Image (cartoon, rainbow, N blue to C red; front, side, top):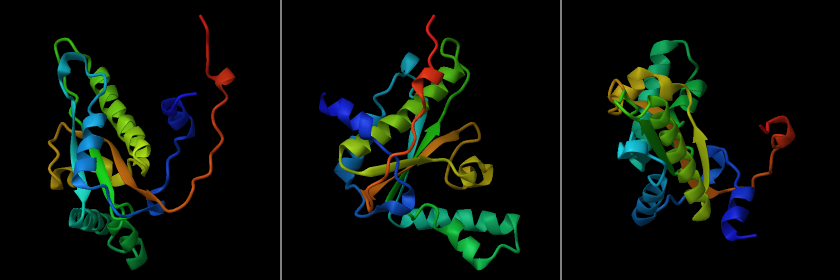
Length: 187
C-alpha cells in the first residue's frame, strides 16, 4: 500500500466545531490552493475561484449571515442568532470555492460545475495530507443571493462548497460506508 492510497482510505470529514487553530499560514494556504486548482478543467476555463474567510473576515461574514437571519425572522432568539453569526468562525480557515460555470461553445456547463466540485475534493485531500482536518459544507447562506452579493459573488456565480480547515481537536470516528455491491453495475 502506498501513502496516497492510505490517506484516501482513512480520510474523514471533521465537523467545523472540532477544528481548532492555528490556521494554516500563508505559504500553506498557497500550497492548498495550488493543489486544489490541479483538477480536470476542459478548455482551461478555470470555471471556479476562491474566497478566503480568515482572521477577522470570518466574523465580518458572520455578521452578514446574522443580519440576514434576523431579517428573515425578526423573532429569532439571541442564542440562534449567535449560532448564525458564528457559522464561519467555527474553524480557523474557511475557503469558499465559487463555481463560475457558464455557457460555452465547446465545454458543457455540467463539466464546469463538476470541475468546481473536484476543486473542493482536492482541497480537502490536500488539507488532510498536510495534517489538517477539513469539512465541505454548503449551509443555507451559501445559497442566499443576498449573502453571495454581500461578499462579492457575481449574479451568475454560486458556491460549490465552503471548506472548513483546521487542526483536529478530536480523532474522528469512521462512519458506515456504502456497500459497493449495491452501487456497481458491470456492463
